[in-house]
Image (tube, rainbow, N blue to C red; front, side, top):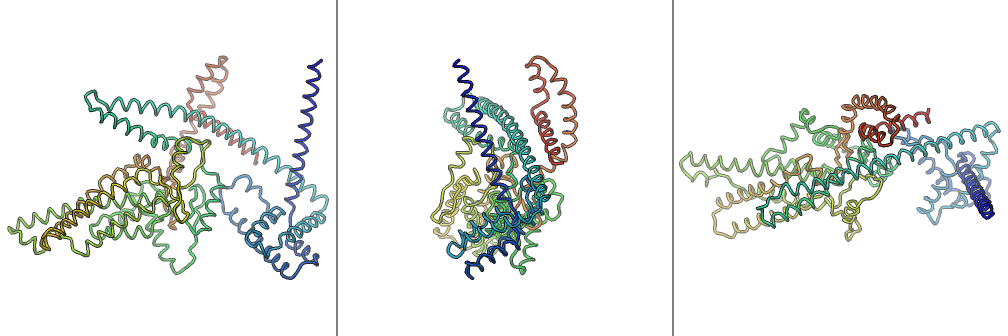
Length: 590
C-alpha cells in the first residue's frame, strides 16, 4: 500500500514539475515572440507624433536615437553579408529591426547619455509601433510568420542538440588523447633522465639534469596539447572572434582574424599616407607572410632582397631600425620575431663579418710590412658616429624587451582548465597606469633580457676601461671596434630561437603574419597545406573505415569490438564521427 502511495505521489510531483516546465517554456516563447515583433521607422515616428506630452527636446533626442539605431543596423547587415564564417544564429538574423534591438540599444544609449535621453518614452513608442505593426498584418501573414518562427525554432533546437553531441564527442576524445599523451610524456621524461645520466657523473650535474628536464617538459606539454586542441577543432568561435576584431577596430588596432575567412582590414583615416601604407604592406607581407612557409619564401625574390639588406654591415642595422618602426609592436609573435631576428643579424654582421673584416685588415697591414698603416686608418676602427649608432641599437633591443610584457596574444578556447594554464594566468599584473603586464610573454625569450643586461654591463665595463687607460685615439678606436664585435658574438645564444621546433616550445607564441595590406593576421598556410596534401588520403581512410566498421560491429564480444575500433586508429575513428555530424548539419539546413 505504501508503495502505491509513494508511486502516486511521485507521479503527481512529476506531472506538476512537467506542467511547470511546460508553462515556463510557453512564457519564454511568448517573451521571445514579443521581442521579435518588427518595428518600422514610419510606425515609430507615427507613435511618437501621437504622444502629445513629449517636449521638443525629447522628440529631437528620440529622432537622433532612431537615426543612430538604423545606421548601426545597416552596418551590422553589411558586415554579416561580407562575412563568410557565419554561425547558425547569424543565419537566422532577419533584415528588419525588432523590438529587442530597440530595447538593447536604448539601454546602451542611456548609459552614454543618462541625463538627456528619454528611455521610457522611446520604449513606449516602440511598443506602440510594434502593436500597430501586428494589427496591420493580415491573418495569412500572421500564420506564415508563426509557421516560419516554429520552423526556425525547431531547426535551432535540432542544431543545438547536434552541436552538444559533437562537443561531447570532442570532449571525450580529447580527454582520452590528453591522458595518453601526458602519461607517454612522463615516461619519456623519466627515460631521458636515465639516459643522460652516467654513474661516474658528479652528483650536482645529475641534479641539474633532473631540474632541466622537469623545467623543460611542461613547455613541451603545452605545445603538444595545443596541437591536440587544433586537431579536435577547438578554435575560437566565430562570434567571439568577431567581438575581438570589433573591439580591436574600435581601439584603432589591427584585427586578428582566424585566417579562415576574409581578412579584416583596418582602414587608414588619412589618405595622404596611402603610399606609405602600401609600401609598409609590401615589405611586411614579403618578409613575414601569413600564407607562406620559409621554404616557399626562398622562392620569393622580394624576400631574398629584403633579407639581404638586413645582413649588410652598415645598411643592415638601419634596415632593422626601420623594420622596428613599421612592425606591429602590439602582437607577441611579431615582437619576439623582431628581437630574435635582430639579435641573429647582429651575430652575423657585428660578430662574424666584422671579425673577418678586422682580421683581413690586420693581414693587409702585415703584408704591407708596417703597422703604421693601421694607425693611419688601414686597420679596424670605430668612429664616434658609428659608436653612437651602436648605442642606439642596444637601446632598440631594450625597448623591444620592455614592450614585450604589454603585447597581446590571440585568444584560444579549451574544453577544460589545466594546472599549466592556471600557472600561466598567474603571471598577469597591472602597472601604475592600469595596463596589463604579462610576465610570461615570450616564454624563455623574456628571460634572455637578463643575459642581455649582463652582456651590456660587460661591454660598458670594457668601454669604461678603455676610456680610463691612457691609450692613443687610434688605439681606442680599434679597441672599441673589437668591443662591438664581442657584443655581436654575445648574441650567439639567441640563435636557438631560430630553430623552428624549439622556437615554438621556448616562446609559446601563436604564429602570426602580415597580409598584403600590412595587417597582422593568423598564419593559415599550415591548415591549408594540410587540407590540400592529405585530402585524398583522408577520403581513402574514410572508405576503409566504412568498409571495416560493419565487420567490426558484428562481433559479439565487447573486447573484440574494442580491438576492432582500436585497430582503425584514433584519428580515423574521430574523422568518421565528424563526417557523420557534418551529414546531420547538411540534412538540417537543406
